[in-house]
Image 1 (cartoon, rainbow, N blue to C red):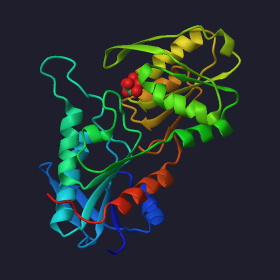
Image 2: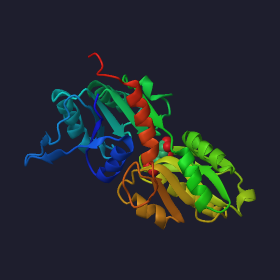
Image 3: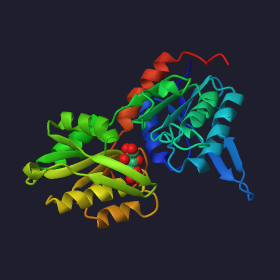
Image 4: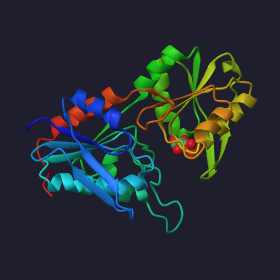
Length: 304
Ligand code: R5P
């Protein structure tokens, strides 16, 4: 088969271009625009017939991206692509992973089913796996998960003096633990009680022995920022300095980024899974390794 061809949807164009170079793939032109009535128009300006097509689309604010993404995958297949893969550096709809209240939609499962129907494989970075142990529980296509922890650990090693890593809740333990191990620094995991979309309570154990260290909060996602803001307040009241706040994925709903800085974060750093001014850690090479591995595994289109 000839070299893969990569197309970008949304604002990740520059990232996708660099990814194409790393993969020795062609960077194809895909026109996506909206009709006046809000429907999607889509046209492949570079042919993908007979090629392994890779669509790059990070899925923050997923609802507005979902229809164009599904159409792009269907169109690529319809135009004769040999296989159609998705690189989604941030994978959406991972948090509603069970029915918490009667009648709720378990969107992580439905979203996974929809993606698995139109794509042949999926690569992402640190999806929010909490009650699902792996993506394979909900995705029925081959998946590869790249882990940003070693890159975050390297960044902290060069940028932060005497770090003490802090995970704001039990779910963050997997990410903060891996980063702390990589950086060879201590780690404390706090307890969080979420009372609503924007209401969380954090309890902090005795951290008196770490007052001379630089607190580094690590989580997979910053969305409303409430988890980190609440944690900052607790730490500062306990006598710590303003922490460095790090997330793999900076979703930053509304004014979350400004709120975080205003709450006393000394720095905010994210990976570039979602383009944002806080991006400090580049995951392009990491993703290219995962895509290379999945392409090696996929030799042709799946039976449907
Ligand atoms: C939840 O378990 C995640 O790991 C994050 O802690 C959470 O998504 C952060 O959300 P927010 O910024 O809205 O508090």
